[in-house]
Image (cartoon, rainbow, N blue to C red; front, top):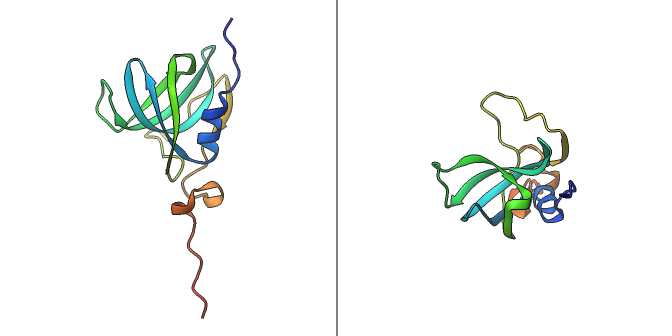
Length: 121
C-alpha cells in the first residue's frame, strides 16, 4: 500500500518558495511548487512548470503523482508565490498538506523578494 504522507522536500520548497528541478515521466522539469496534497486517492504536487522538457507548451500547470517523481533538487532560486488561476478557483483536494502563500505575502519570500526597507530621512 502506498503511503499517503506529505513529501518533506516538497513541503520545504513550498514553504520557502524555492524552485525545484525533478524528473517526471522521463522528462527533466524546472518548476514552482504550489500545492501538495491528496487528490483522487494519491499524493500529488500541483506545480507551474517554467523550464525543462514537456509535451505541452511552457510555462504551464502540471499535476504530478509524487510516487512517480524522482531526482528532486531544491534550487537556490525562489519565486514570488501563488499565481492567479484563470477561473479564480482552487482545486478541491481530498486533503491539502500545504499551499504556497500568495505572491503579495512577503513573510516567507526569499531574499530577492523581501520588501525593501525605507531609506532613513
